[in-house]
Image (cartoon, rainbow, N blue to C red; front, side):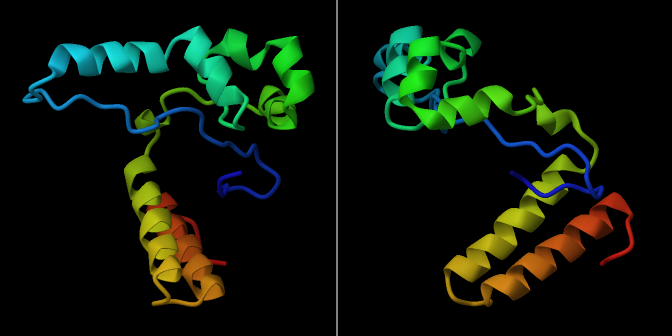
Amino acid sequence: PLPTFTTGGPRYSTVGGWSLFVNPYSRRLRQTVRFIDWMTSVPAQKILARSATIPTIRTVRADAELREQYPPLQAAAASTKAYRPAGLLGYAEVSRAIHTNVQLALRGQLEPAEALRKAQRDCDRVRGAKPS
């Protein structure tokens, strides 16, 4: 789950957003759009669910057979869904704070604990909270 700004508050995760985008200058624009249409279809989402990718389609997430076979879907079914988080105040800045500090840790430029402290401090600053 992603960090939260209140102790004991709801925690959220993300679903989808697999960087499926279309370059408008692509020479194969029609084929690219068809591929994305397929990737976001029920059959493709079921295939992805079998490889532990949480589907974006509600009916696929709720599929009883898939949920029984793939435990991550059980957890996904119990999670709180927050749609269009980009509309939340400070979302971009918080995302940047997390991304930047995690990348620094992955590159070995910061120890993981320090990266998390910095991410928390940056998030607190965005939200106007006192750093912990």
